[in-house]
Image (cartoon, rainbow, N blue to C red; front, side):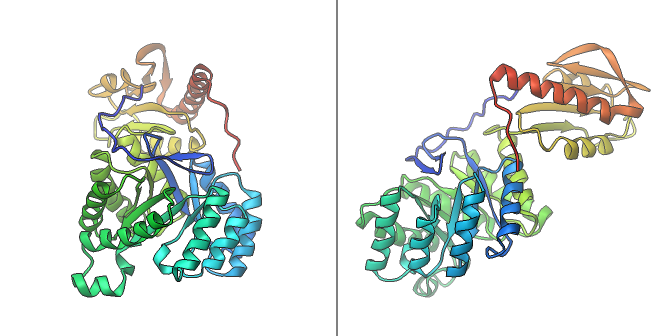
Length: 372
């Protein structure tokens, strides 16, 4: 019962990162970045598979050295999700990972040497049909821009981005996306708004170095929510000092809340009060953990009493309305004859939610995803 979003997306050009379309109305891709040592191939592959298992569309891997580039080759051979190689300064690493199967290069053309070296990377990207992401960060602006503006400003971030864009334009390369990230919400939002008017390429959104799990999720939700609500953004990453898997979850939660993209279960749950007839918080927490593997878009309403319960259940795929001892159960917005015992709700709901997800998959011809 996922309602269509009223948001009108910014028109942009289309690129492909592996088989994932970015821009021109394609679903907003959610990505994360590994935080393992890239040279630890086993740990990095394991983390990438966990990111993919919760719905990640793309993953970025830092490649700071030639040893890391050799490890990247082995990593790329063992994963199926598109992998973006993050490279700074050394153009030779970019050439090497392109040879080893990188699906996108995250570089700043102005930071990897003279025009001849940049051209070598761009020519390689053209030959192998690999896009580039220009990644500007408020914490690493060029020194002359720091002196010109005195501090990071939206104009400073955009000027930095346009320098790199101009280099690619001169080399007749248009398969790129751009980000202008900052840790300050208003700085990042202002930069993205300005950049959105300057170029037609896809924009990669993020509030960089947003913080820990809770504070970072809130800051990212506020900043990215402002931009997404205006139709700005084609792919995103939530930058958290936390498990990268959590970045994917928060990213999809943001998109779901704006009705832009639904993947997995959207739980509608009351905060609980003295009217509740069962432990709503414990029930929802248990179900969220047990049902993380379900990627089918669906609404599940868990309400502890009959005040708001029926109304929420009537617009959900699966609904529960609290009542004494036995709670009301809804499917597709319709009250069912059966009632569920309050002392065994988690087990009963899990079975019914999984059955409903399977039914929706069959109805919509959604293939079952193989994880790991």
